[in-house]
Length: 181
Image (cartoon, rainbow, N blue to C red):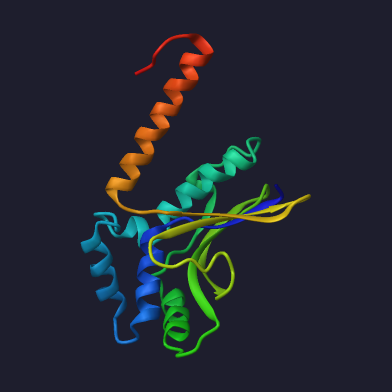
């Protein structure tokens, strides 16, 4: 793996998708609707200011490039509600037949990590909609590989954590013959 691009925050994807689908909807109204679905964090800034995506990006970077030892403080973050982002979002979402979408995109390399709103072509794997996340791996031998999954919300997060704990327990049983749970 040489690098990765990703959309790792389903809340921002949902908000941006709503703005694309309903040109009369304001940013604040889209955020309120996302909060009502349970996808947006109680403190909206965690999602809207890119903190959640930044933390996930640091974790993913450490999986892809373990020698890097990144933390949240190493990630250059710009969320979707700052003035520059809002200008781009309004411009792209108000076009009737736009070939672009705005997504909160993480760029992950050995040299660094950034999270910021970017325009992506409508046919790009990064142009996910609704509550979807995606990771686009750029590999040396296989080219681009994308993995897309449903994200966001307490129930889904809890389900993933329980699944991870079960996998850890199964690994521990196989490795050491003991149960950790």
